Length: 52
Image (cartoon, rainbow, N blue to C red):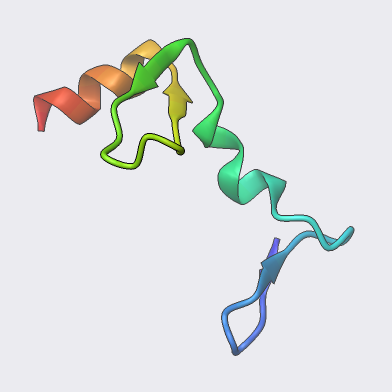
């Protein structure tokens, strides 16, 4: 991954997958006030979110 001075981030194929892949990395759905957006994280990440 690289980032330009203006903040654009991309891999060598001009994709940003690595940056956002964690949004769908697990089985636990994280509640979000915006009902059109959801996140699925792994169990360890979900526990961390609720412990903080």
